[in-house]
Image (cartoon, rainbow, N blue to C red):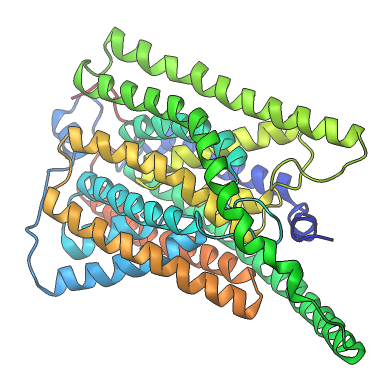
Length: 463
């Protein structure tokens, strides 16, 4: 039995209940806004200009100097980038509070710089993963089919998330992030514990087999591993070139749309809404095309009696599974737009949910984040949302952290033969993000309540 099969059995337990939890808790939080906005702590309405302006953050750009703030930011940024890319979650939930509380940036600038750090760390991680072979197959460690499946939904979700960040009150965004992060981190931790137990049993079986082989003096064991050291190098490059041909058009279109939206149109104008709405059929078409291809290949293999998965995900590509993947991809992008992260907080746990082994889940999620974060950085640069010196410094720190984080953790996993370490790192980063975002959000919400600021939905078209 290969790796993905028993990982898939672990993850197939309570996916539906987890989705129900997210939908129920999020719906309750959104519904409560209608009551809070008209409560005694919200005496102002949408037409109060002071309240509208109070919801807009003033640009604050500290200078890049050598002091304790930049030192702490460097350490947190390095560790956050290293562990975030290893877990496949990026680390935006740690970067944004660090940049606001420690360095002193405003919320919007912090979100933009967070994207720069995610881009740098994910780019170096992808470069490293291109040279790493799959732990059990002669295929790339990055699953390009799954990347192409989730990329359009993530891009569409990011568009929705950015727009919702303008409409949703700050306290609601905080509550939604806490609900989501606590749920995904706890579920990932549970999977990590189960994987650790399974790995312990496998190590015991392997130890017994090695003892039996040594007693029988079996020779030539290492020759079976030789092809994996050389052949994946060529297949990775071929797969990368093949899949980039499909990824590039969608990404280039998204970039062009973003530039048009920011430079050639006004918010809420007819051109703005037309171009914005056109993203949805394009993204859905790419997603359905890839999902249909996976479904047909999976059905054809099963008809031939071959039950091997067409991609790394050990699931049957049914209608419900496709809808589940679409929902989670959209949710991941929305969270990325709200938070300023790369969407990996959903994509990483999602890939584990559908039976992808941790090494491939981390590499694939990081590959997807590299494209989404790089496009966001281009958008923020055109809008002049971050200072160039600080961005270049943080990107350089993240590039080093992404490479060395992948190097040390991959070596550790190989030595200990425990891929569950990646899942524990993923869960820890998400939980730390829930704590930091929860503290920052709670503090700001309390301040807004004391100042009797409006706590309901804001106007999207209001300048």
